[in-house]
Length: 121
Image (cartoon, rainbow, N blue to C red; front, side, top):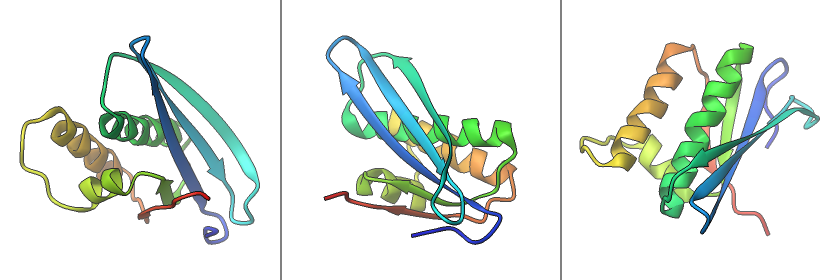
């Protein structure tokens, strides 16, 4: 799904490894699908897959906020991560706190964002 003219789409993916690290990958596309930026961040720690996805979403949002890009669509292959961000959380688990960070970053900027999951085949 492409973004509107002048707006961007942020694709997020994450991977974790037994060597106590994980990677978050961000790919930013313009309105016609051209890749305009890619980035990767190494996060030290041992996390479950859902936490890794949430960390990748947070880091991707921080990345694009530093560039001042208007993100219309944020896409992740983790429907569980998307559900956590789309719905209220009120706990104090690591996932709840990361989710609240994501919501806070999204509220600081004037985000016009559709957050959804995409399963690649």
